[in-house]
Length: 379
Image 1: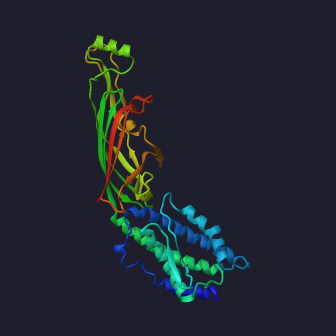
Image 2: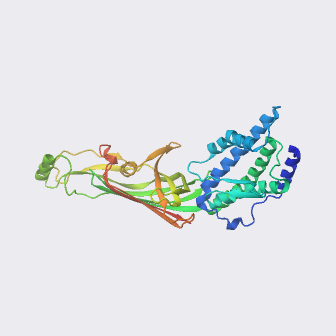
Image 3: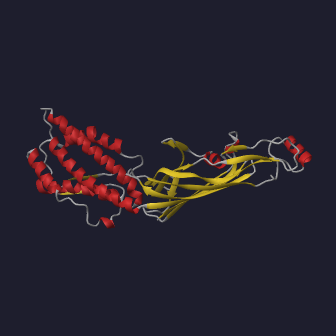
C-alpha cells in the first residue's frame, strides 16, 4: 500500500507535465460548446471544493477512511455527485468517463460523454488517472484521502484545459442578430416596422450578450376598409360620416434593443428526436414612443385629444413568453432549433408569425398580425 504523501508526491510530479494539448487549434469544440464548457468549469470547481472540504473533515477525525470500491462509490454518491449536479447548468451536456482495470487487469478509460468537446475535456481528466494507474496500479489508494487527492489533481488538470478552451472560444465566437419586425394594429389602423442589427459576444458564463439601437416607424394605413365594433353603430357612422372616423398610431424613432442572456447548446429536437444546435434567446425591446390620433376627415364627431403611448413595443411583447432579467423585461425564444447542424453553422433563421393578440388589453397592445424575423449569423 502507498502512503498518502508518497502518492501525492507522484501526483504533483505528474501535474508539472500536464499541458494543454498542442493541437487545440484543431479541437472539436466550437461556439455551441461554450455553454457546456462554462457548465463543466463550474462542476469541476465545485468538485475540487467538495474534495478539499472532505479532506479537512478527515484531518479532524481519527476514524479510518478505507478506499475500497464500496467506500469510494458511497463517498462519491454522498459528497461529490450532489456538488456536481448543483453546479451543472440547466440543459448542459453531461460529461462522464471512468478509468480502471479491464477484465485482465489492464488500465483502460471508458468515455461516454455525448459530445466531442466534453470527451476532450474528460480525456484530460482521465489522463491523470491513467498515468497513476499505469505507474502504480488500480489498487493504489491507501485511504479515501489518497483517492481524493488524485481526483483533485485530475480536476485541476481538466480545469486548466477548460479555461484555455473557453478563452479561445471567447476570442473567436462572435455572432450578429438581424431583427426585422412588422406589426399591424387590430382596432387601430396602423402598421409598425422595426429593425436592428445586434453584435453578440460571449460573456464569462457561457452566454452571449449584446446591445444595439432599434429603428422603428409606425404609420397610418387608413382609412379602414370596414368599421370594427357594434354593427349598428358601424352602419350609422358609415351613413352619417361617409368616411368613417378611426384611430391610428403614428411615430418613429430609435430605442434600445438588447440580448441580455442567451446561449447556444446541444439539445434533442422533440419533433424529430435528432440532436441539433438549440438557440435559447432572450430579447429586450425598449419602449417606443408614438401618438394615438383620432382621424375624422368629415368632422362628423367631436374631436378627440391625442394620447402618447408605446404601440410597437407593447404589441411586440403581447402574446409572447417572457420574464424579467435584472429588472429588464425580455421575451424568450425557446423553440429555436437549427436542423441538420453538427455544432457549427453559418446562419440560423427563426420567423414568428402571429394573428390577433392582446385583445381585451390596452389599446396599445392590440395587433391583428405580426411577422418578426430573427437571423443569427456567425461573423
